[in-house]
Length: 110
Length: 117
Image (cartoon, rainbow over all chains, first blue to last red; front, side, top):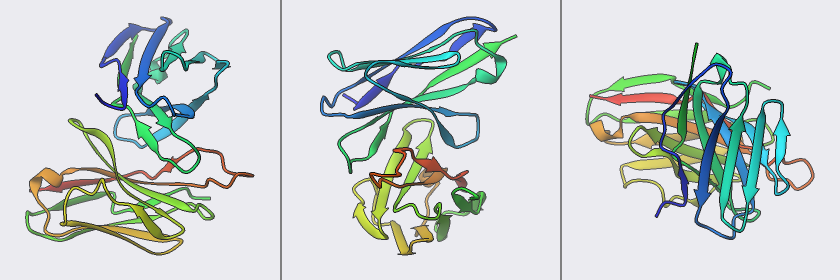
């Protein structure tokens, strides 16, 4: 089993739709969680960190369920510019490294 | 700051040739990572350094791959001899984990797209 798994996608949604991505991780000792965004032929960039209480950044909402080892990302009112691959990232204790999920590709259609 | 700088951005070479990829991390970052990304395998960590010292190279696929970090501002990833299956995008990333001002974020360079014919 991979350490971090994500919905395989691709997700094709119309502009304005709400879309949710799921991610599960296998290491129960994981401490930090992130969503990275990667545009086509570009490098990954941090979208947002994920906190235990859940957090929101504009149209983006991230949730963490430690008991189920599950992370989610919700995008509301999707824009064409949201089209990208979304990578779920998990990190262990201080000093351990990031483990990247395989990514879920999103295409927002006009 | 210019961010993480990688060169070359594109490299096309023939099987058997030596390939050297270069990376300049963000100034002040004490961790440097080399990743490889392919459609089949996603983003894989090859090796990482802390304060210029290699810490974990378990992701390096085989002895044809080697990496060095002679100083805090420069690292190389070398493939010798190269093979077609090495074709991928190679990313360098840097991070600082200083408890006071570390942001727990890895910053990636633009990547080197390697094609081995």
